[in-house]
Image 1 (tube, one colour):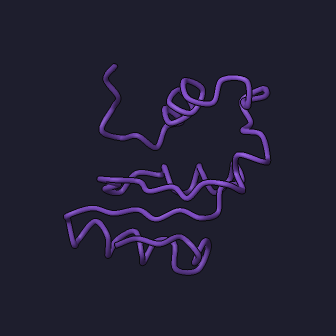
Image 2 (cartoon, rainbow, N blue to C red):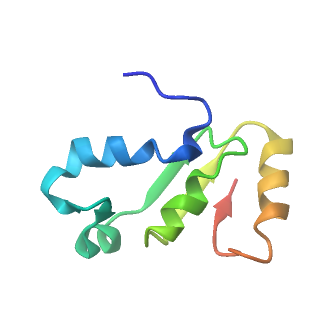
Length: 88
């Protein structure tokens, strides 16, 4: 299955549905799943994936990318709004 390099358009829901099936209720992940997992977004670039996951209730999110400029951009972008998002 191929996904867009701009993964921040909600495509992560398809992956979560594939692995958690019954835990997904009307597009929302069950609360017990949200509390149990740390999420690592690999190759985040400048996508909105971390923000969308945060809005869904996941709050232990680390995003990584090899591009210093992408990480710096994301750190600056979310510095005030969602300053608990980690970009490395």
